[in-house]
Image 1 (spheres, helix red, strand yellow):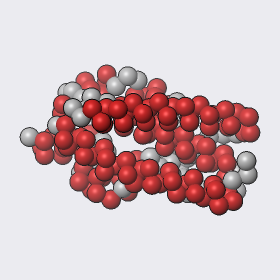
Image 2 (tube, one colour):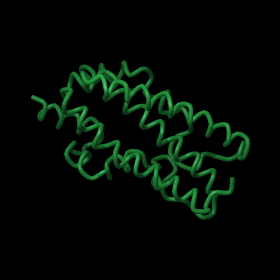
Image 3 (tube, one colour):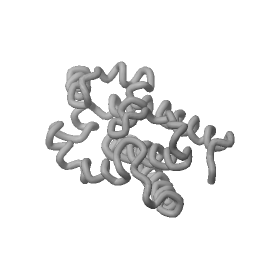
Length: 177
């Protein structure tokens, strides 16, 4: 059933159970945190330019939303969620390109401040074929459509709240550009 598979999926995604990942938003924040740079998403080092850190973190944040929408609801039975997945992928891909342009213009020689370099998540995930093979199908097939749809929505609410909080910090005067 979906419960058994959901537990298995939790093991595959890092050992936590899906209930705790879905329930508090900390799971998504932790997954999207600065694993490569040692810095949590949404936290900023006062010794580095805020704008540079914002671009790097928001790029990684958007890549996570794109990946999640593609792999979790891209094949949902609900047309509204498939449309949402397409909208997230289109709008956030455009925003990533814009942020990468700013980064190149303002900080061309700067090292990555957190997480993975831009585009690395896409390279790791590819088209999702390897993930589907490892899991035995898409998340919709393995966990069940309703479970996956709900998990996506529960994860995306705190995920996007984190992005709003980061954007508000940029608007409060922290941003240089």
